[in-house]
Image (tube, rainbow, N blue to C red; front, top):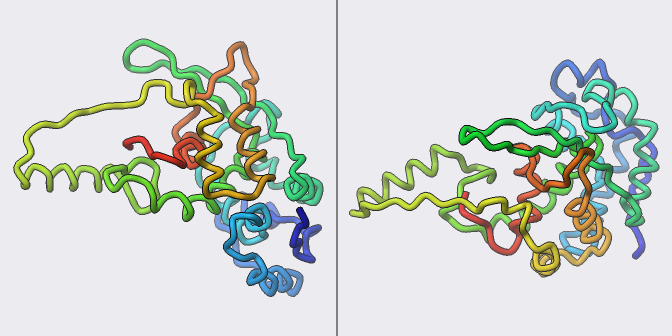
Length: 252
């Protein structure tokens, strides 16, 4: 598949450290950023060129702001957010090339266990910052495609929805005369979901084979630790839920 590559692909995506690591990301006003703006209309809304939309400069910089806001500990490579924004610029052209060619290989996630209120352990997988950035960029492109098909009763990790919205809906049900509430959760969903079935559902809306391959690689990524687990922290869980609930969104 041919790629519709912007002319500024070799420019670093992340603004300089002094402009971002301590605070907000300023808008790009340099003449070098103009080609990316001019070529945006060429990135059509078809599902066959989604990778071009994912690596688009504006999308990547929005993803970086979101990753920074989420904070989080380093992955297996030990690179912190501050270190990442110092070193990522020279690495981006090669990573971008691999993403567009469909050859990018995600790194493993660092295993960490934290105690749960019931005495059991929650196993977290903490990815490297570069993979958190790529996953966030994917999420931003896929969410508008999949979120409209999710249940109106689902409020977890969805744009414009919150626990407060769920509480208001419960209050509306009470006013309508309902008196029983059933609290359910899908136990170990990410451990047990059948990846083949999941990818079939994703492929109903995503035709870009490079992106389907990358999502599959993320789903199969091993953990840097004694056990392999697909359970992850809440923020990262929200990103992967865009993949894992593409066909039917479980109740939030």
